[in-house]
Picture 1 (cartoon, rainbow, N blue to C red):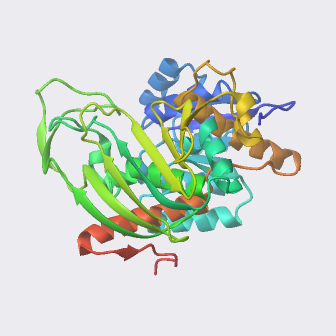
Picture 2 (picture 1 turned 180 degrees about the vertical axis):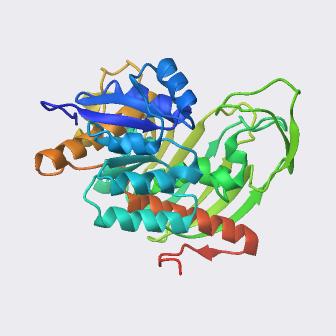
Picture 3 (picture 1 turned 135 degrees about the vertical axis):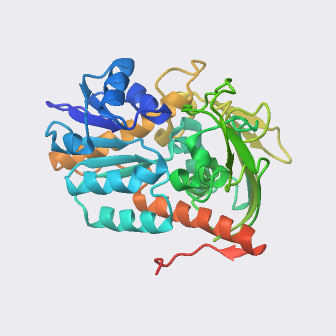
Length: 394
């Protein structure tokens, strides 16, 4: 799905870190979308980011973004504690909003934003970008078809190592900026969304144990995501109150069970997201670091490796492939697919056309993930199984 029109859809990026740079890279590969400018935490940083990332406008304040009539879409790429403020203001200004996850800093903020989105005219979406790999969509259609039978077990992991050392630092370690869950909220949320999206099932209860390798960390000056500061000068000791890792048992609405390990302290694991779904006649395994292969297991027949080749995939998946089989595509291409999906929805809205089928996560779906994350934290606190809350927080 590609956005195209007589007038390109203008986009502004709010935030200037890793997510912002990734969104800009993907935007430049979306026909019909034009990145106009960027807003960082100060006018000076906005100018630096605009020059570094090659965009024309360096906004001085959020009001400047919202007052720009050529901006159709706001990409909310700010730290978590700013998501609610930026998204609320953008919706009030009539802008379409694509937000990085989590939707809000906590469940209350997520509930408020989901409610605002239901009553707002603009298109909204959340960046659970792992949905948008071609083989993930093929797997989703395979599960829907029932060819492998009903799924009874879902398991996997999301492992990274970029916060392994005591002197690794990022704003995500500060709960007032990132929220009360870190490994679970930051990367575990992706895993939960992905298995729910693929399986069509829903996590209804969890039993979790959280772990903290470093009760204190050595904080340097400013460090960008996935970068390190080697200098010991100017460091301070900071207490850490969020988890480095988690192990979670899951119960799904269908009766299926599952388990996941989530970690930001696993040496050598850079972005190791794996999902496995075991069904009555087949099993399915996918690894984000080898995203062009889907492994299909069988008991009484040879196992299979399905390659990302558009001629072999379900139509819903083949449309996400941009190069022939054997020409590898990966993480940046999945983000591009997410933006293609979102901008097609925005274009249809603008033109009064029938909305295209969407894969990009809704605010309501992101709220559901926030509730699962909240239940995981509560389960660790209680040392017990906890049901995922569905009602609105009082």
